[in-house]
Image (cartoon, rainbow, N blue to C red; front, top):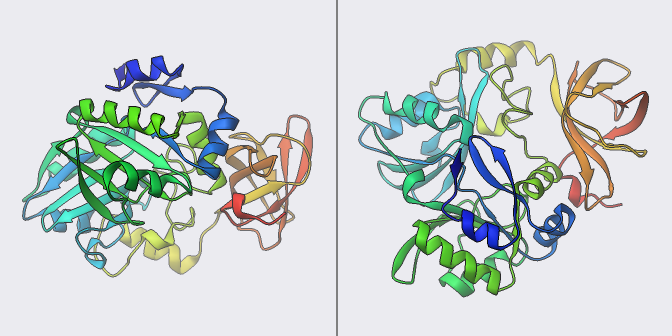
Length: 348
């Protein structure tokens, strides 16, 4: 089992640990609710060193991104980031990725933890490409919340703008970061050498940032309506079913394009929808759902700490035209309404 270089620091902060994607990572420190609310109202930080990351460079790097992923990297410029998808020939989602573009022929690619080796190997096999595994030489720290940008500016002298990369110098060492995250809040993700990362985390704690674990990260991403690979996304799910059309650019050739064009022409048979319970209950992965037109199942669900009610994501077939559905929780069907994420911004 892999451990973050920050493991001892987490222990000192009282972390409880869980196995995730082959790593032993903090699941919580105090309470999930307190950590969740800290990110929504002020600032929290997460050790996300378990996430995959590798440098992609060489004269074939742009061609490889175009050939292997559904989005069009040429639609952005160096200094920006892009969410994209690696598909199979059937249009299924092998992984969802974030790309940080530093300069011509130099990118950082961030797969999910469990898919790192497979994704890196796929790019390494493309002509004119060189890959370098960044996990062994860095830690990745997410700083998220309404006060995150101010805190990063105070500590590092600058904060990355949304979906942009930035470079700073802290204690004489280069710090790479981007205005990305997985909570629905502003802030950034910071990649730095392990020893510097430990001191940076200590500085974040001293400045008042709340340590947060993977449990809060999951409730935050669900409130924001962000899908999770392995739960809401997999190789049997297409971007059109998942509502990720924005990450598909049919203006270039890529693996899985033909299947998506066929699906687009005939229409999707199911759709990922968001819902909010109208009664008490906690929706869980795998729970059945039904509408007046069809049925499906929950892929992600929990109690929303900000709404204090159950929320979730579910695939429903056929895609519902109305606003009502029910979720089976144990032996009863609980009424719910279809809602467009992010859930936490709803007016109640």
